[in-house]
Length: 246
Ligand SMILES: NC(=O)c1ccc[n+]([C@@H]2O[C@H](COP(=O)([O-])OP(=O)(O)OC[C@H]3O[C@@H](n4cnc5c(N)ncnc54)[C@H](O)[C@@H]3O)[C@@H](O)[C@H]2O)c1
Image (spheres, rainbow, N blue to C red):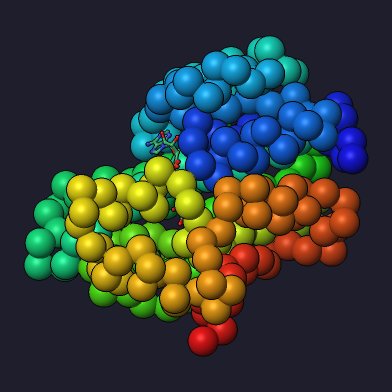
């Protein structure tokens, strides 16, 4: 398929995991992809895309990167916010710094990037997809900061969808279950058993019986960005192997 020829797509967190898979899929469908990440990963260097190093928690870095994207590409049609971080800690062990790091990345970062890109999406009647989580819907011990940040993304998405409808901009979120990426693997590093026990315990929480693959989230993201989703805005697409159906 070539659904995104002549479309300029900006992906945050495109250096790894779900963002990287999304960048690859957009490129394979003809899009001109720009990636904004604070690390330029080795995988990114081999992709046919432009990369901009910026920390989404910093307004000045975000605005500078978006200005460079516009200078090069002249337009932005699609924004996919995937950059995000995890935190596994009991509330009592959560430091103020750690709380700020999670909320500043997963929530404020989405706000800063979206605010910087909106003027250009108004010109193209563009599309935004935000990456929330299945943990936006349900609680999980040791994930208070993370789940708070992801639940907030759902209502950020809904409110922005209403606000931008008059400009022809659609805004949706995607809610992945556990996906095999560096973020997930960090939770189980060094033999650490993590909040849900072992990785096998986590897998058992997904009725489908396995972890998701990054491409299995990238494909629904591309669907949300495509004309097939033309009547969808303010929605959250749950792609979680049945996790929240239990
Ligand atoms: N992997 C999962 O199981 C899972 C499940 C549900 C939701 N998610 C969400 O999906 C998104 C992508 O997760 P992933 O698993 O692909 O993670 P990942 O760690 O593989 O990739 C995240 C990318 O974001 C970038 N990033 C992080 N903080 C940044 C910052 N401040 N500025 C710029 N870039 C930054 C990282 O450098 C990295 O390239 C995240 O928002 C995550 O919360 C992941």
